[in-house]
Structures are given as structure tokens and as C-alpha cells.
Image (cartoon, rainbow, N blue to C red):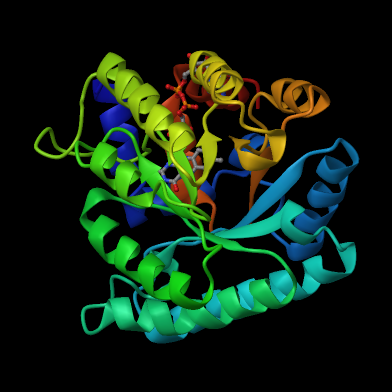
Length: 310
Ligand code: FDA
């Protein structure tokens, strides 16, 4: 992984830098490109605009790594308010939500996983009641077993609960095989966290090759694959695989992040594919934003240019 990328990912976890970056007024303009606003009404406006273009959404109330139970309860309440706000739009499964278990207390020192399960369950129940689903985002590699454990618990009563797998991790091909079963919704991404060589591919070409292999496992399997990527090569790979396997457009989807390759989102939706934009909103955008800067030199250049033209 390039040094700059490593530095940005390390910075995404540093509270001191968080204060500097979020305190810079100009940052806001750049953040707006990747984040659909700080409030629920702003996020709902973005959902309406995307729906008008034929694009489905998964909403992420920004936040991660909470340090006490009351913060985790606030995350639950924010998601319940989000689902209440989505209900009148009547988008059904075209508006789902994505959660990070670390925002529900997963990393709390005592019983974190139980706290997260207990607090996320009412969100999943509310989503099921309105005919939609929840996907559990995947965070750094130390959380994978715990997150897949919570997923298995939730899927007992709510089989539509979605999983995320990160192609960069050595374990993921096996996880993909285990999860490629009927009814199983799995988003495959490359992986946005800095990981050691003991658990993850370090070379981009190796990550890409692993992504293609895992995608094939998912598409040839019996579940519902969701390709979370902006990479034209991986998008082409999914198109080729669905043509080869005869999958119908209601049996897989493309997922892209809000604000990234929007013209491609519209193009794929116009061609009859299900396209879902991952729409983050909320005040706690720092970690999300720093991971986007780390992903792509062009994103960082855009940020630096806007600082220079302040
Ligand atoms: P990559 O970054 O390797 O880029 C490959 C190519 O894609 C580029 O060469 C370019 O052609 C094109 N491209 C990429 N970004 C572009 C841009 N901004 N503008 C124009 N072209 C661009 N991660 C995680 O660890 N856990 C999670 O739960 C999730 N969830 C998630 C949901 C969704 C819907 C998406 C799309 C992504 C995630 N991720 C994630 C992030 C993911 O792991 C990964 O970091 C990013 O998607 C970047 O990887 P890409 O596959 O897009 O390709």
C-alpha cells in the first residue's frame, strides 16, 4: 500500500487530526461531494433525487467507534428515526440502510458484541416491518468474526440481512463460499481499511484478482450478489458473469458510493440493472471522508486544490 494512503488511513483513526480537518471551513465544500448532508431531511432530499433517476439507495448514518453505551443507543435512535423518515417515501427495498456495528457498541470493552446485537436488532425489526433490509458494513479485519456472528444471529429471524465481504482479506474466498447460499445478500467490496500482510493482500493487482475470484463465487452461488465497486473492470466482470449464468436483473445489483461516478450509476440503471447508491449523512463524517481521500489520489488532489483556491 502506498505511503500516502497508509498515512491517510492512519489519520482516519486519530481524534486530534479530526479536530483540525473538521474545523477547516473549506473542508465542508469537499465533504459535500461525498456526504449527502448533516441532517435527515438533507439525506431524504438526496434519496428523492436518486429515486427520480431510477437509483436505489442504502443509507448510512455516519458514525463509528463509539466509546460508551449511551452513544450506541443514540446510533440506534438515529436509525429508527431514519426508517421513520423513509417510510412515507414508500420505496420498499429500494431504500435500505447500512450500519456499522462499531457505532452500536461492538468495540466496548465489556460485552460489546452483545450490546451491538441488542441495539441493532430493533433497527432490523423496524426495517423488516416496512419491507426493507439492513446491511452490516464490514470494518477492520479484527471485527470480521464478530460481525459475521451478529449477522448469523440476525438472519435467524431476518434472513434478508445483508453481509459485506472485503476481497483484500485472505479469508474472504472461503467466507464468500459459505455465504453464497439462497436468500443471502452479500456486498463484495475491495476493503477500505489498512491491514497487515498476515491477513490481507497488499498489492492492488492481487486485491483486484481476489475481487474477481470472489465475485465469481458469489454470482455462481445461490445468493444475491451486490458488487460494491466503481472499478470499470469489476463492473464489466459482473456484466459478463450475469450474461454467462443467465441471472435476471432482480437477482444481483451494482452498488456505488454517493457522489462517485454518478454518470455511471445513471448509465447502468438506464440499461436495466439494479443500481444502489450508498448514501452517507450526518455530522460524524471524518472517518468516512478520510477513507475516500485515501482510496484515490484524484480525491486527495480535489481536496488540496479546493484548499489552495479558498
Ligand atoms: P479502486 O479504488 O481500486 O478503483 C478502481 C478504478 O475505479 C479506478 O482506477 C477508477 O477507474 C475507478 N474509480 C474509483 N474511484 C473513482 C472515482 N472517485 N471517480 C472515478 N473513477 C473512480 N469498504 C469496507 O471496507 N467496508 C464496507 O462495508 C464498504 N462498503 C462499501 C459500500 C459500497 C456501495 C462501495 C462502493 C464501497 C464500499 N466500501 C467498503 C469501500 C471499498 O472497500 C473500496 O475502498 C472502494 O469502493 C474503492 O474501491 P473500488 O472497487 O471502487 O476500486
